[in-house]
Image 1 (cartoon, helix red, strand yellow):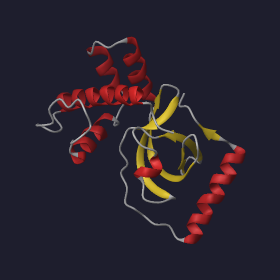
Image 2 (image 1 turned 120 degrees about the horizontal axis):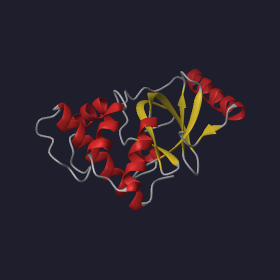
Image 3 (image 1 turned 90 degrees about the vertical axis):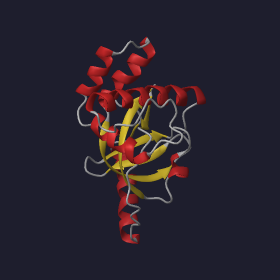
Length: 179
């Protein structure tokens, strides 16, 4: 349901280095520096840099061409070109992962938390958010940020979301890898 401590370190190490690259390349936040941990980072800054990153996957290609990486780091970051950016409804948490519904594409994703289960990150279910899903070592995670408006759904909408979840699970299943 969450990454192992080693995988969490690996994710943040790669993600933060990529954010620093994007920030330096596009001068998004002048005083961002070179953080090695997500602790204490200004989320408003991180969101601005992250938004620039996900504007186009060519930024990842630039990073891969210009940075000396281990094979593992190269594979991880290269896989992020398969990202899914969109609006999601976090439907519920299961034992293995959290269910996120892309209601425009009618796809269910099984998403792992990074440091904490997603149920500890959001205040209630169902929960609307804008997010970026990325592959990571055979599972789907989000890029560590949810952009939300804390919309509470009426009972009839909750019922409709649950019906969509049940129907999609039965007909299409839950996507657990991004290929």
